[in-house]
Length: 144
Image (tube, rainbow, N blue to C red; front, side):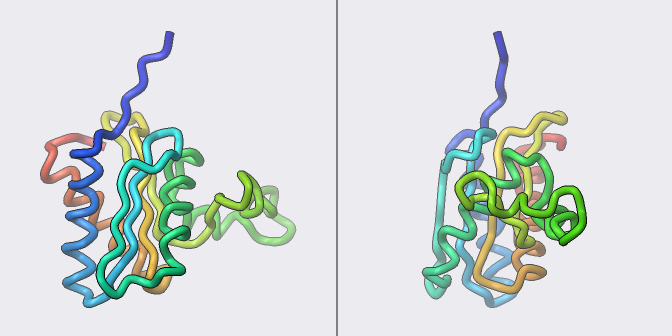
């Protein structure tokens, strides 16, 4: 039998609050997605002014962070022609994202979900996702 830790809706809302706070600070309205450890959507928010086209991108970033167990920007670096992971971006029915802004969410070394941000540049999305994680750990007291 497996014992799986899974992010709750209340915890997902904490990540969204942290991402929203940073997005407001940066004056960039974002799309914010949180998935469980299996990559299934738990919560989503598109801030007023967030790009409609960024909604599925944020969800795909959260999916990738959770199921691939690494930040999406890492796969961007690895998914280059001639490298062993080239082509991974077209797997999982096209939901695997290599654009910065997606991270796994871990508690005590176990992945409980993923967070994905989209509407800015990849670098801006990554900053907001990192801020969401910092906020999450501060508010919950959990350790990564």
